[in-house]
Length: 224
Image (tube, helix red, strand yellow):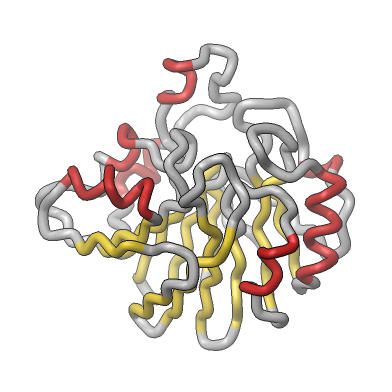
């Protein structure tokens, strides 16, 4: 399994030609609504040409579910499995076509291409928000989605997480770096990857102190 950081909270997982895209933000949609939230890193058009087999959206905020980005991938001609909680599922189905729109609320499990996907609790301003655990032949990757530190989350998470991807920006109902470090310590993964920084702010992963931290560089493979 190779993993590429797409910026903000976007991730691309690839295994044997099977492409999984999570929360891609590859436009300037947010800036159009709030000019102070302009992209610090320009869009790399190469990633708009990828054909995803499966897409996951964790919640209905524009930097996670962005219709301007999504229209490059989900069309009336595509045949993509789309996993989305209710708030996104209601919207993304409007793209129509032969795509398989799966309602992916908390505790839902979906298995495809030998990979198991489990929706887990997230504590965020979109009440439908989820995180996701990806289990690829026993190696588990946990993407929290946007979330605050909440005790109820831990009951959903298996003990043997290989890699944890979590927000550390501390605004918009996300964990700050202190709480994110506490969260990572509680999950106890082998690798911790801070994300959701550097796109609309000047925060750096260098400022995040955590054991087993791996710094992700935008548009590059994450070395786990």
